[in-house]
Length: 115
Image (tube, rainbow, N blue to C red; front, side):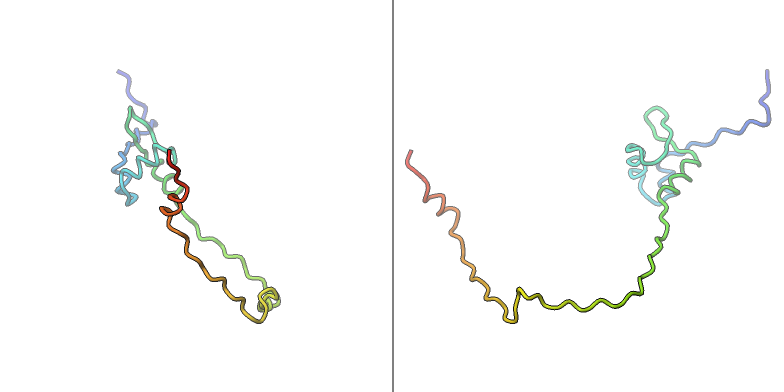
């Protein structure tokens, strides 16, 4: 019987979505949904999603957010305050008085014809 060479790496463990969800602090549904939509790496064994430690590390990297560097504000001359537009004028325009519409039932009855 041939012996295994010592330089072979042991098989890595496959984790279930529930295990990954526990580590990430989310639901197993979230993990399965992301795998189903192919947004995170996974291995498929039959119809089941399985994850390696490398997959978990990549999922963490994919969801990592870095702080954005805020652009330095320009030290230009201050902008002048906006002036009131000339179209409005010095006197506020009189608002047109609103009129109520007639009810739909009445309008529909006006156009009813005998058949």
